Length: 317
Image 1 (cartoon, one colour):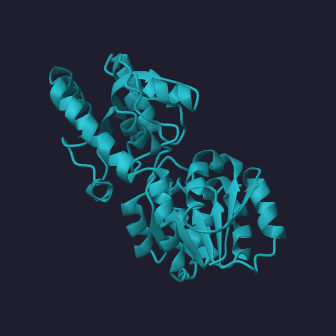
Image 2: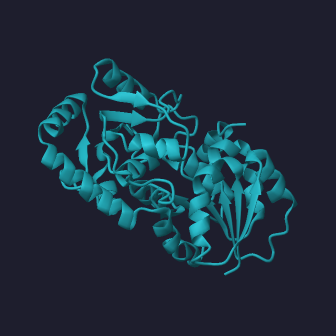
């Protein structure tokens, strides 16, 4: 199956290790374009007649109304990590993704939430599930002392994920969780290695973000906001066995206190989590199943309705 992958440079910062691993699994041509305006120009000018599958490695919400350019590609597959925003009420793309995908028509979308894929399928969308992963060439356990009892690494000032921001800033104010920053690559990996419990607060996301897998791979004990049960089952996350989950401030406080008082349990859970992700959740593991996601015939979505047209009006610039 002749395949072309078109990546925006911003998205490629995340997916590059996936495509590098995919080279070992199947053949494809790969083009990098400059942000979303470059993708629009490329799709408008390129002859795709020699390809069976064209993968748009981009985020639809960043394309906005420019998504119309994607209709020119036969065998279109959109690989988008941000479709979870379909269920985030503070996002401009809240409940808009199905309408846009129905407008594109013949398209498969690969999303990183199991429950989200099921939801889209019920709405007539050809959706596949491929969870996020991590780059095992960058993230690893260095065996150095863990001097931070509980911490989160990364930005919290995101206008869409307001609940995460408020929750983590409050935990920092209460002295429960340190909020840290690091440059990508080796500095980020080293900082993860200094953390005993990585506190993740993917509140309202409905799925687990990349940082969860990275923290576990670096040997942190993952203390994560509890997502729908379907997500835990799909990833092999088991409460108290390889992760610790919470869904309230009170539960987080209680579990952090327990982990601080029971070092053997904390160590056991951290090691089990690390064993899980290093075996099943690397980008190379995701690459291995990509050909299967591409092979089935792409199904055409139902025609758009007047309600879809109203939603599309608000789908960005």
